[in-house]
Length: 45
Image (cartoon, rainbow, N blue to C red; front, side):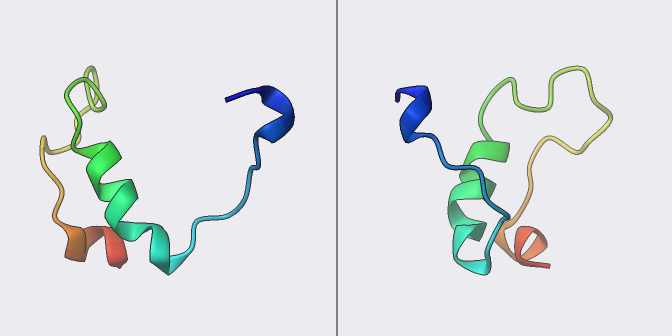
């Protein structure tokens, strides 16, 4: 993706599934105290 095509916006409810997938990828939480897996329902809250 080129920088001129990049759009930064607020998270919407429709983004919950993709955001959960991203947060559950290996290495996303490395070095944090967060739990290693997050459920979709938790992201929707």
